[in-house]
Amino acid sequence: MYRKMIEKLIKWKDSKYRKPLVMWGARQTGKTWLMKEFGDNHFDNYVYVSFYNNKRIASVFDQDYNPERIINALEIELHVNITPEKTLIIFDEIQNAPKVLESLKYFCEESPEYPIVCAGSLLGVAIHEGVSFPVGKVDELRLYPMSFEEFLIALGEEKLASYCEDYKLSEINDFSAKYRQLLKEYYIVGGMPEVVSRYVSNKDFHEVRENQLAILNQYEGDFGKHIKSSELPRIRMVWNSIPMQLAKENKKFFFGQIKSGARHKDFEIAIEWLIDSGLIYKVPKVSKPSMPLKSYVDFSAFKIYMIDVGLLGAISELDIDSVITGNDIFTEFKGALTEQYVLQQLLCETKYTPYYYSGEKSTYEVDFLIQKGKDVIPIEVKAEENLKAKSLKVYHDKYQPSFSIRTSMSEYRDQEWMINVPLWTVGAL
Image 1 (tube, rainbow, N blue to C red):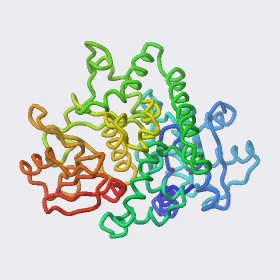
Image 2: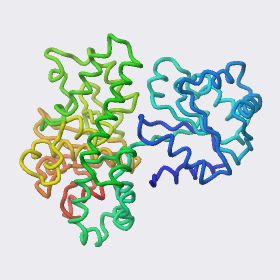
Image 3: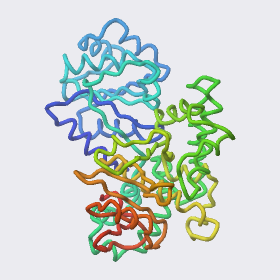
Image 4: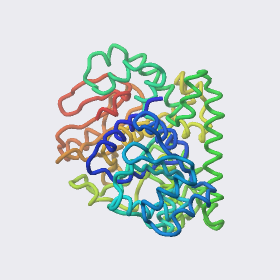
């Protein structure tokens, strides 16, 4: 499997300003595999330590934070040799060992010659529960599920994947039919590495669904292990309501659909826990599409998406054949699936932070806004080849952005005030 994150890790390794690296990401996104793959191919050797139920090794960090003492202790405990610059040190599941996280400050300041990569499935949750984070003393990267481009590479479609990096290429249009078919497959399979790997091996959508349901069960198992019993029902209610929330034409998260009379404050902790665990993405509304967008966030309105488009289909019990054939059963939900897909590509393939905007009295809505240089760029998402863009046109006429973007199943075209970007190239934005 190829992950683009490898290129960022190589850049980190070669940087003269390198600090210990913390990799964020939800469970099952491939952090452990990626760290080991990086160690295998770009260092003489690596040392892997998981702190899941590993109190013996965690106790190495109890005495003090002296890097040389810790390195010596690890060599003795693990029967390994750790060579500066040549041995990658991997600390996994560090949410279970707060002192390991705190030690990174001292490795940064006193022993930068030891390359250290860390990860933790519920690290975001642990940080918000009082675990001290070494701010300014670590580098950070976030790992998402596999992008559509990585999915194509896994299927052996490297050439098609390379074309996706420039939506203006004529070759993109030559293979539109194939891209449409492969995109529908991605909607079903999603980007969870284990699911993709199994699909590449046997092309069995039903095994894919079984694998996805197993992952969803693991996630729900984490709910019970890591949160207070009083908060557990709220987290499950938010989690299970996501398909229903996204199925609405107006995808704003509506608390009344979770429970009659529910308010934001009733579910605030539950939503933040799911965000911290990396299982959901929160896209805030802005009250005004002006620079900088972050200054105009409306904290009372937002949309929530799942970690992965394939998992969204699985938790929604979406009929697999309906996605492939595009029959009427799928019509009601294809907008939700497509928005989920576009958001994922924006997050994992670009540096933009997505927001959304709706006009006065919600008369029109722009699916996503991104801040590009000095411009605020609107993006309208269309699930099919429908080229009508009424909301986008209203927005464009009112705010006059430098250009507007519609992404759809249609091919690239420039309409002066707007460009249409094929859905399979949205990561090229």
